[in-house]
Amino acid sequence: MALDRREFLSVTGRFGLASTLFPGALYTLAAQAETSAPAQASGDTVPALPKITPEMIDQAAALAGITIPPEYRQAMLDGLNEQREGYAKIRKLQLPNSVAPAFVFDPLPPGATVDTQRREPVYSRAPAGLTVPTNLEDLAFASAMELGDLVRRRKVSSTALTQMYLARLRRYDPMLHFVITLTEERALAQAREADADIARGKYRGPLHGLPWGAKDLLAVKGYPTTWGAGGFEKQTLDEDAAVVKRLDAAGAVLVAKLTLGALAMGDKWFGGRTRNPWNLKQGSSGSSAGPASATSAGCVAFSIGSETLGSISSPATRCGVTGLRPTFGFVPRTGAMALSWTMDKLGPICRTVEDCAAVLNAIYGPDGNDLSVHDAAFNWNAELDWKALRVGYLKQSFEADQQASPEKPPANETAEEKKQRQRREQQQAVSQARRAYDRKYDLAALDKLRSMGVNLIALDLPHMPYGPMVAGLNAEAAAAFDELTTTGRDKLLTEQSPDDWPNIFRVARFTPAVEYIQLNRARSLAIRETSKLFEQADVIVASTNSLQLVVTNLTGHPAVIVPNGLRGNDAPQPPAVDAGDDDQIGGPGTPVSITFLAGHYQDAKLCALARAYQQATGFEKLHPKLPG
Image 1: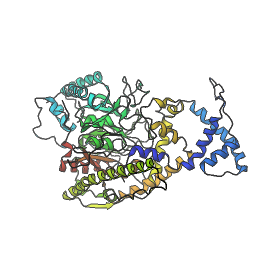
Image 2: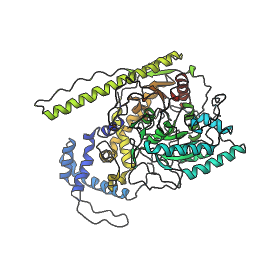
Image 3: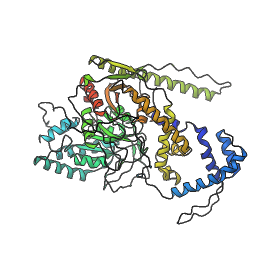
Image 4: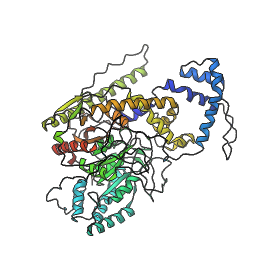
């Protein structure tokens, strides 16, 4: 199954619409009958609303395809009117995005335990003889671990690295559009402090003195936090996000707040579209668009992104970098924009897996505010015997697509309908050709693992209705941005198609509480069944652009996405225009990726095998050739 995440969100928002239409249609009919009564200024009173009538119930029931006997209609009226007035009172609280619901999602299945004993991380040794080049920019694509070693040994100063990366951010932003705000004053002060600390022998670890970039859904005191969205360009939050505080404590240097698609969708933001450094005609994908693009372009040592449904995985793939989506509940989200309280994850985007491990080690663990975070240990050990790990692969995700049957022309098909049908068939054929081409890289990854001595166990995801479960994400997102919809400020968002947030938020308001609870109960079953796979394998390999992306985001399992080579000159050509609706458009000379999965809070084992694969392939050393 190939995934178009943008369309998937929209379609899943419409799953079960017949069953959810009743309450939405009912209140819509009532709203249409509303008189222009003046709103009350204060107190618990709410604007006068028209009463819901038996006729409205009949109309709504007809739209929903259900029948409500007359004797039940009358009994419903008082409760429905009372309930509707209650909604208005809650809305008057003007709940900010930072207020979480009074429930906490836990991805652990019954009986699961986590290791809480923390041990000192074990990092690999820096390459012998690593020196500082005459031109400092020759270090732009060095790994964070390599840069950290040079800073530790005082071969290069944090101030020099910071100035070099700030200069590159300025030089390449006009072509890549990945910066929302440079944090230069803060960065230079941090860099000077890092140099002084290291000179005094106060070394804080492998990230000390390294310049990094934050996806601009992370709050940073004294700077705008725009969420990439029109209408929020000047928003400031008087706090530092938890991960920002922790990276400050690790001595890292924040140089920029980087782009994200508006409210964490895609790569289009209020200032334009973030570009893919490998092909400037393409977007960088999203929504961690800026972090992936800037890391790929050698403009930061590492970055922090977020994922709800592919927002680390997709841009990491497009931009040819390494992304770690940690177990849900490993990293606190305090001070980060909320989209879905039960699915949002923060994680590093870096050049290597060990870089990701070093960053995760600095940011994970409870903070006392995000109650979803477990006191689980991330014990990174670069010397772990990865050959002792049981490794599976999702067999179905590596299989060729079944040839789709051509559409059957309807009777009396018009010339325009025929043209549209032929266009759909052509687009489907092109998409299948691209997937068939990329499949060669997926299969080559399995062959490489076998050549490394890995005995691959064939596994498959449990068969469940995952699509309808994603409607919960849309409902939570609509709640997180309720005021945006109810005030009409959603018109300020850049994108306004049926597949974009404004319309998705409106559709999501038709989801009744009962159905939202039911889909979360279904997620509980999905968690239990998917977790059983990790009783058979410690790590599982999967095609990145497959159903696993949806499943593991629903179940909270961790993933590492690593570069898996570049498409050859024989690759299918990309479309002339990247419409943003296909994450796998590819084209000659662009990156592909492979994904590794693990059980909950087994992120260290996951990274150990993914690092071994990187060492065996060297694809992480490839980087784009930028003009200038």
